[in-house]
Image 1 (cartoon, rainbow, N blue to C red):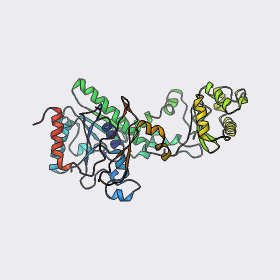
Image 2 (image 1 turned 90 degrees about the vertical axis):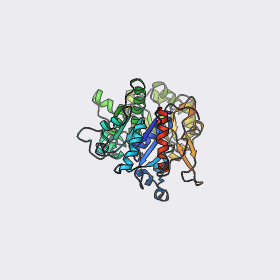
Image 3 (image 1 turned 30 degrees about the vertical axis):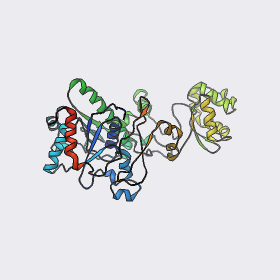
Length: 396
Protein backbone atom coordinates (compact mmCIF):
# COMPACT_ATOMS: atom_id res chain seq x y z
CA UNK A 1 0.00 0.00 0.00
CA UNK A 2 1.19 3.52 -0.82
CA UNK A 3 2.55 5.43 2.22
CA UNK A 4 0.02 7.88 3.66
CA UNK A 5 0.64 11.25 5.35
CA UNK A 6 -0.40 10.07 8.83
CA UNK A 7 1.23 6.64 8.77
CA UNK A 8 2.45 5.89 12.29
CA UNK A 9 0.05 8.30 14.01
CA UNK A 10 -1.99 6.50 16.68
CA UNK A 11 -5.48 7.75 17.49
CA UNK A 12 -7.49 6.71 20.53
CA UNK A 13 -11.13 7.36 19.62
CA UNK A 14 -13.75 7.59 22.38
CA UNK A 15 -16.41 9.17 20.17
CA UNK A 16 -19.93 8.19 19.22
CA UNK A 17 -22.38 8.57 16.33
CA UNK A 18 -21.08 11.05 13.71
CA UNK A 19 -18.96 14.17 14.34
CA UNK A 20 -16.19 12.31 16.17
CA UNK A 21 -16.29 9.10 14.12
CA UNK A 22 -16.33 11.18 10.92
CA UNK A 23 -13.21 12.98 12.17
CA UNK A 24 -11.36 9.77 12.98
CA UNK A 25 -12.49 8.26 9.66
CA UNK A 26 -10.78 11.12 7.83
CA UNK A 27 -7.65 10.57 9.93
CA UNK A 28 -7.77 6.83 9.17
CA UNK A 29 -8.00 7.53 5.44
CA UNK A 30 -4.90 9.70 5.81
CA UNK A 31 -3.07 6.74 7.36
CA UNK A 32 -3.66 7.00 11.11
CA UNK A 33 -4.08 3.83 13.18
CA UNK A 34 -7.45 4.36 14.93
CA UNK A 35 -8.58 2.34 17.94
CA UNK A 36 -12.17 2.88 19.07
CA UNK A 37 -12.74 2.56 22.81
CA UNK A 38 -16.33 1.34 23.14
CA UNK A 39 -18.66 0.71 26.06
CA UNK A 40 -18.78 -3.05 26.75
CA UNK A 41 -21.84 -4.78 25.34
CA UNK A 42 -23.19 -1.65 23.67
CA UNK A 43 -20.48 0.22 21.81
CA UNK A 44 -20.90 3.28 19.63
CA UNK A 45 -24.58 4.31 19.55
CA UNK A 46 -24.32 4.42 15.75
CA UNK A 47 -24.09 0.63 15.81
CA UNK A 48 -27.83 0.65 16.49
CA UNK A 49 -28.76 3.39 14.02
CA UNK A 50 -29.91 2.94 10.43
CA UNK A 51 -32.83 1.78 8.28
CA UNK A 52 -32.00 -1.94 8.57
CA UNK A 53 -33.34 -3.21 11.91
CA UNK A 54 -31.60 -6.57 11.56
CA UNK A 55 -28.21 -4.87 11.26
CA UNK A 56 -29.05 -2.59 14.19
CA UNK A 57 -29.76 -5.62 16.37
CA UNK A 58 -26.33 -7.02 15.46
CA UNK A 59 -24.60 -3.71 16.35
CA UNK A 60 -23.76 -3.16 12.69
CA UNK A 61 -26.12 -0.30 11.89
CA UNK A 62 -25.49 1.44 8.61
CA UNK A 63 -24.68 4.69 10.44
CA UNK A 64 -21.77 2.87 12.06
CA UNK A 65 -20.65 1.03 8.93
CA UNK A 66 -20.45 4.31 7.00
CA UNK A 67 -17.89 6.01 9.27
CA UNK A 68 -15.78 3.29 10.88
CA UNK A 69 -14.06 1.24 8.20
CA UNK A 70 -10.36 0.67 8.81
CA UNK A 71 -10.59 1.15 12.60
CA UNK A 72 -10.13 -1.28 15.47
CA UNK A 73 -12.58 -1.82 18.35
CA UNK A 74 -11.71 -2.39 22.00
CA UNK A 75 -14.36 -2.69 24.73
CA UNK A 76 -13.28 -0.91 27.93
CA UNK A 77 -15.20 0.13 31.04
CA UNK A 78 -13.57 3.36 32.21
CA UNK A 79 -15.22 2.94 35.63
CA UNK A 80 -13.57 -0.44 36.15
CA UNK A 81 -9.98 -0.56 37.53
CA UNK A 82 -8.81 -3.06 34.92
CA UNK A 83 -10.42 -1.04 32.13
CA UNK A 84 -8.83 2.16 33.41
CA UNK A 85 -5.42 0.53 33.57
CA UNK A 86 -5.65 -0.60 29.94
CA UNK A 87 -7.01 2.78 28.91
CA UNK A 88 -4.09 4.56 30.56
CA UNK A 89 -1.63 2.30 28.77
CA UNK A 90 -3.31 3.20 25.47
CA UNK A 91 -3.17 6.91 26.33
CA UNK A 92 0.51 6.61 27.15
CA UNK A 93 1.27 5.17 23.70
CA UNK A 94 -1.16 7.28 21.65
CA UNK A 95 -0.53 10.41 19.63
CA UNK A 96 -4.13 11.65 19.67
CA UNK A 97 -7.08 11.22 22.01
CA UNK A 98 -10.41 12.14 20.45
CA UNK A 99 -13.62 12.47 22.48
CA UNK A 100 -17.08 13.98 22.12
CA UNK A 101 -18.52 13.65 25.60
CA UNK A 102 -20.41 16.60 27.02
CA UNK A 103 -17.95 19.18 28.39
CA UNK A 104 -16.39 18.01 31.65
CA UNK A 105 -17.39 14.34 31.45
CA UNK A 106 -13.88 13.04 30.72
CA UNK A 107 -12.52 15.10 33.60
CA UNK A 108 -15.14 13.65 35.95
CA UNK A 109 -13.95 10.21 34.89
CA UNK A 110 -10.54 11.25 36.21
CA UNK A 111 -8.91 12.25 32.94
CA UNK A 112 -8.70 16.03 32.82
CA UNK A 113 -6.03 17.66 30.70
CA UNK A 114 -3.48 17.67 33.53
CA UNK A 115 -3.93 13.95 34.08
CA UNK A 116 -3.68 13.20 30.37
CA UNK A 117 -0.50 15.28 30.14
CA UNK A 118 0.98 13.36 33.05
CA UNK A 119 0.23 10.10 31.25
CA UNK A 120 1.65 11.35 27.95
CA UNK A 121 3.26 14.80 27.53
CA UNK A 122 3.17 14.42 23.73
CA UNK A 123 -0.56 13.67 23.61
CA UNK A 124 -2.87 15.77 21.44
CA UNK A 125 -6.28 15.71 23.14
CA UNK A 126 -9.19 16.85 20.97
CA UNK A 127 -12.70 17.41 22.31
CA UNK A 128 -15.67 17.92 19.98
CA UNK A 129 -18.79 19.37 21.60
CA UNK A 130 -21.78 21.35 20.46
CA UNK A 131 -20.66 24.60 22.02
CA UNK A 132 -17.11 24.15 23.28
CA UNK A 133 -15.68 23.41 26.71
CA UNK A 134 -16.39 26.87 28.13
CA UNK A 135 -19.18 29.44 28.09
CA UNK A 136 -22.80 29.61 29.27
CA UNK A 137 -23.95 26.90 26.84
CA UNK A 138 -21.08 24.48 27.38
CA UNK A 139 -23.25 22.05 29.37
CA UNK A 140 -26.21 22.13 26.99
CA UNK A 141 -26.92 18.94 25.01
CA UNK A 142 -26.43 19.32 21.27
CA UNK A 143 -27.41 17.32 18.23
CA UNK A 144 -26.92 18.33 14.63
CA UNK A 145 -30.41 19.80 14.27
CA UNK A 146 -29.93 21.89 17.43
CA UNK A 147 -26.74 23.36 15.99
CA UNK A 148 -28.40 23.97 12.62
CA UNK A 149 -31.05 26.03 14.39
CA UNK A 150 -28.73 27.98 16.70
CA UNK A 151 -26.23 28.76 13.93
CA UNK A 152 -28.84 30.52 11.78
CA UNK A 153 -28.44 27.84 9.12
CA UNK A 154 -32.08 26.79 9.22
CA UNK A 155 -33.26 30.40 8.99
CA UNK A 156 -31.75 30.75 5.52
CA UNK A 157 -32.74 27.31 4.24
CA UNK A 158 -35.91 27.21 2.18
CA UNK A 159 -37.97 30.11 0.89
CA UNK A 160 -39.64 32.96 2.73
CA UNK A 161 -42.73 30.78 2.89
CA UNK A 162 -41.05 27.54 3.99
CA UNK A 163 -38.06 28.59 6.14
CA UNK A 164 -36.80 27.61 8.60
CA UNK A 165 -35.89 24.20 7.22
CA UNK A 166 -33.35 21.64 8.30
CA UNK A 167 -30.59 20.90 5.80
CA UNK A 168 -31.32 17.40 4.52
CA UNK A 169 -28.26 15.73 6.08
CA UNK A 170 -26.31 16.22 9.35
CA UNK A 171 -24.13 18.98 7.94
CA UNK A 172 -23.06 20.43 11.31
CA UNK A 173 -21.79 17.05 12.49
CA UNK A 174 -19.75 16.71 9.31
CA UNK A 175 -18.39 20.26 9.56
CA UNK A 176 -17.47 19.71 13.21
CA UNK A 177 -15.67 16.49 12.32
CA UNK A 178 -13.74 18.13 9.49
CA UNK A 179 -12.76 21.07 11.71
CA UNK A 180 -11.47 18.64 14.32
CA UNK A 181 -9.53 16.61 11.76
CA UNK A 182 -7.89 19.76 10.39
CA UNK A 183 -6.97 20.92 13.90
CA UNK A 184 -5.49 17.51 14.76
CA UNK A 185 -3.37 17.43 11.60
CA UNK A 186 -2.12 20.96 12.40
CA UNK A 187 -1.31 19.90 15.98
CA UNK A 188 0.61 16.87 14.73
CA UNK A 189 2.64 19.15 12.46
CA UNK A 190 3.28 21.62 15.32
CA UNK A 191 4.40 18.82 17.64
CA UNK A 192 6.99 17.81 15.07
CA UNK A 193 8.75 21.09 15.87
CA UNK A 194 7.89 21.60 19.55
CA UNK A 195 7.78 18.01 20.80
CA UNK A 196 4.81 18.92 22.99
CA UNK A 197 1.20 17.88 22.82
CA UNK A 198 -1.76 20.25 23.11
CA UNK A 199 -5.43 20.49 23.96
CA UNK A 200 -7.96 21.15 21.17
CA UNK A 201 -11.46 22.44 21.91
CA UNK A 202 -13.77 22.17 18.87
CA UNK A 203 -17.18 23.87 18.94
CA UNK A 204 -19.62 22.55 16.33
CA UNK A 205 -21.60 25.79 16.58
CA UNK A 206 -18.59 27.96 15.80
CA UNK A 207 -17.29 25.63 13.08
CA UNK A 208 -20.72 25.64 11.43
CA UNK A 209 -21.05 29.42 11.50
CA UNK A 210 -17.53 29.70 10.10
CA UNK A 211 -18.53 27.44 7.20
CA UNK A 212 -21.57 29.55 6.27
CA UNK A 213 -19.38 32.00 4.33
CA UNK A 214 -21.10 34.95 2.72
CA UNK A 215 -24.28 34.35 4.69
CA UNK A 216 -22.38 35.45 7.78
CA UNK A 217 -19.89 37.91 6.30
CA UNK A 218 -22.54 39.92 4.46
CA UNK A 219 -24.08 40.70 7.83
CA UNK A 220 -20.85 41.20 9.76
CA UNK A 221 -19.19 43.38 7.15
CA UNK A 222 -22.09 45.07 5.35
CA UNK A 223 -24.89 44.89 7.89
CA UNK A 224 -27.15 42.99 5.49
CA UNK A 225 -29.17 40.27 7.28
CA UNK A 226 -29.45 37.13 5.13
CA UNK A 227 -32.85 35.90 3.99
CA UNK A 228 -33.92 32.49 2.72
CA UNK A 229 -33.75 32.34 -1.07
CA UNK A 230 -34.76 28.74 -1.71
CA UNK A 231 -33.09 27.31 -4.81
CA UNK A 232 -31.76 30.69 -5.93
CA UNK A 233 -28.25 32.09 -5.39
CA UNK A 234 -28.71 35.49 -3.77
CA UNK A 235 -25.34 36.77 -5.01
CA UNK A 236 -26.12 36.67 -8.73
CA UNK A 237 -28.83 36.20 -11.37
CA UNK A 238 -29.59 34.11 -13.26
CA UNK A 239 -28.23 31.62 -10.75
CA UNK A 240 -30.38 28.87 -9.33
CA UNK A 241 -32.75 26.11 -10.36
CA UNK A 242 -34.62 26.30 -13.66
CA UNK A 243 -37.13 24.15 -15.55
CA UNK A 244 -35.97 21.91 -18.38
CA UNK A 245 -38.38 19.76 -20.38
CA UNK A 246 -37.93 16.71 -18.14
CA UNK A 247 -36.96 18.16 -14.77
CA UNK A 248 -34.94 20.73 -12.85
CA UNK A 249 -31.64 22.18 -14.05
CA UNK A 250 -29.11 24.22 -12.10
CA UNK A 251 -27.58 27.16 -13.97
CA UNK A 252 -25.06 29.61 -12.53
CA UNK A 253 -24.53 32.36 -15.08
CA UNK A 254 -22.87 34.61 -12.52
CA UNK A 255 -20.65 36.61 -14.86
CA UNK A 256 -21.82 38.99 -17.58
CA UNK A 257 -20.24 36.98 -20.37
CA UNK A 258 -21.92 33.81 -19.07
CA UNK A 259 -25.30 35.55 -19.08
CA UNK A 260 -24.75 36.75 -22.62
CA UNK A 261 -23.81 33.23 -23.73
CA UNK A 262 -26.86 31.79 -22.00
CA UNK A 263 -29.22 34.21 -23.75
CA UNK A 264 -27.67 33.35 -27.09
CA UNK A 265 -27.91 29.57 -26.56
CA UNK A 266 -31.54 29.66 -25.42
CA UNK A 267 -32.30 31.91 -28.41
CA UNK A 268 -33.49 34.86 -26.35
CA UNK A 269 -31.12 37.70 -27.42
CA UNK A 270 -33.72 40.35 -26.50
CA UNK A 271 -33.06 39.61 -22.82
CA UNK A 272 -29.65 41.24 -23.25
CA UNK A 273 -31.10 44.65 -24.07
CA UNK A 274 -34.10 44.58 -21.76
CA UNK A 275 -33.27 47.26 -19.15
CA UNK A 276 -34.52 44.96 -16.37
CA UNK A 277 -31.87 42.40 -17.19
CA UNK A 278 -28.99 44.22 -18.88
CA UNK A 279 -26.80 44.74 -15.80
CA UNK A 280 -26.01 42.35 -12.93
CA UNK A 281 -27.74 44.34 -10.17
CA UNK A 282 -30.79 44.89 -12.35
CA UNK A 283 -31.03 41.15 -12.96
CA UNK A 284 -30.98 40.49 -9.21
CA UNK A 285 -33.72 43.07 -8.65
CA UNK A 286 -35.89 41.47 -11.36
CA UNK A 287 -34.89 37.85 -10.72
CA UNK A 288 -38.43 36.41 -10.82
CA UNK A 289 -39.24 37.98 -14.18
CA UNK A 290 -35.93 36.88 -15.67
CA UNK A 291 -36.38 33.33 -14.41
CA UNK A 292 -39.82 33.17 -15.97
CA UNK A 293 -38.46 34.22 -19.35
CA UNK A 294 -35.59 31.74 -19.21
CA UNK A 295 -37.83 28.88 -18.11
CA UNK A 296 -40.02 29.39 -21.16
CA UNK A 297 -36.98 28.78 -23.33
CA UNK A 298 -35.40 26.03 -21.24
CA UNK A 299 -38.57 23.92 -21.17
CA UNK A 300 -38.07 23.18 -24.86
CA UNK A 301 -35.29 20.64 -24.27
CA UNK A 302 -34.22 17.98 -21.72
CA UNK A 303 -31.93 18.90 -18.85
CA UNK A 304 -29.09 16.62 -20.01
CA UNK A 305 -28.94 18.36 -23.41
CA UNK A 306 -28.79 21.80 -21.79
CA UNK A 307 -26.14 20.57 -19.38
CA UNK A 308 -23.87 19.44 -22.20
CA UNK A 309 -24.41 22.50 -24.39
CA UNK A 310 -24.15 25.13 -21.66
CA UNK A 311 -21.07 23.60 -20.05
CA UNK A 312 -19.36 23.33 -23.42
CA UNK A 313 -19.91 27.06 -23.88
CA UNK A 314 -18.58 27.95 -20.42
CA UNK A 315 -21.91 28.40 -18.60
CA UNK A 316 -21.99 26.24 -15.43
CA UNK A 317 -25.04 23.98 -15.60
CA UNK A 318 -26.02 20.58 -14.26
CA UNK A 319 -29.00 18.37 -13.67
CA UNK A 320 -30.26 17.94 -10.11
CA UNK A 321 -29.70 14.32 -9.22
CA UNK A 322 -31.04 12.03 -6.55
CA UNK A 323 -28.52 10.57 -4.11
CA UNK A 324 -28.56 7.18 -5.91
CA UNK A 325 -27.97 8.92 -9.24
CA UNK A 326 -25.09 10.91 -7.80
CA UNK A 327 -23.43 7.83 -6.33
CA UNK A 328 -23.71 6.02 -9.67
CA UNK A 329 -22.08 8.81 -11.66
CA UNK A 330 -19.17 8.07 -13.97
CA UNK A 331 -17.19 10.88 -12.36
CA UNK A 332 -17.13 9.20 -8.94
CA UNK A 333 -16.29 5.84 -10.50
CA UNK A 334 -13.39 7.40 -12.42
CA UNK A 335 -11.96 8.88 -9.22
CA UNK A 336 -12.31 5.68 -7.17
CA UNK A 337 -14.46 7.47 -4.60
CA UNK A 338 -16.44 4.42 -3.49
CA UNK A 339 -14.70 1.32 -2.13
CA UNK A 340 -16.24 -2.14 -1.81
CA UNK A 341 -15.11 -3.90 1.37
CA UNK A 342 -15.78 -7.32 2.91
CA UNK A 343 -18.69 -7.28 5.35
CA UNK A 344 -17.45 -7.23 8.99
CA UNK A 345 -19.06 -10.57 9.89
CA UNK A 346 -17.62 -12.36 6.87
CA UNK A 347 -20.97 -12.70 5.11
CA UNK A 348 -21.43 -12.17 1.39
CA UNK A 349 -23.37 -8.96 1.95
CA UNK A 350 -22.09 -5.96 -0.05
CA UNK A 351 -20.44 -3.08 1.82
CA UNK A 352 -19.63 0.12 -0.06
CA UNK A 353 -18.08 3.10 1.71
CA UNK A 354 -17.07 6.53 0.47
CA UNK A 355 -13.65 8.16 0.51
CA UNK A 356 -12.57 11.70 1.36
CA UNK A 357 -12.57 13.24 -2.12
CA UNK A 358 -8.79 13.76 -1.99
CA UNK A 359 -6.23 12.07 -4.22
CA UNK A 360 -2.63 11.81 -3.02
CA UNK A 361 -0.27 11.67 -6.00
CA UNK A 362 -3.24 10.63 -8.11
CA UNK A 363 -4.33 7.82 -5.78
CA UNK A 364 -7.62 7.87 -3.82
CA UNK A 365 -7.50 7.27 -0.08
CA UNK A 366 -9.43 4.08 0.65
CA UNK A 367 -10.00 2.08 3.86
CA UNK A 368 -7.71 -0.94 4.27
CA UNK A 369 -10.31 -2.99 6.17
CA UNK A 370 -14.03 -3.14 6.98
CA UNK A 371 -15.50 -1.63 10.14
CA UNK A 372 -14.80 -3.72 13.24
CA UNK A 373 -17.24 -5.92 15.07
CA UNK A 374 -17.90 -4.69 18.61
CA UNK A 375 -14.85 -5.54 20.72
CA UNK A 376 -13.16 -7.34 17.84
CA UNK A 377 -9.70 -6.33 19.06
CA UNK A 378 -10.24 -6.45 22.83
CA UNK A 379 -8.48 -9.80 23.14
CA UNK A 380 -5.37 -8.43 21.43
CA UNK A 381 -5.31 -4.99 23.06
CA UNK A 382 -2.00 -5.80 24.79
CA UNK A 383 -0.51 -6.51 21.37
CA UNK A 384 -1.89 -3.20 20.06
CA UNK A 385 -0.29 -1.32 22.96
CA UNK A 386 3.02 -3.09 22.39
CA UNK A 387 2.91 -2.24 18.68
CA UNK A 388 2.14 1.40 19.45
CA UNK A 389 5.03 1.58 21.92
CA UNK A 390 7.33 -0.05 19.41
CA UNK A 391 6.51 2.65 16.90
CA UNK A 392 7.46 5.22 19.51
CA UNK A 393 10.70 3.38 20.16
CA UNK A 394 9.86 2.58 23.78
CA UNK A 395 9.01 -1.10 23.51
CA UNK A 396 9.79 -3.02 26.72
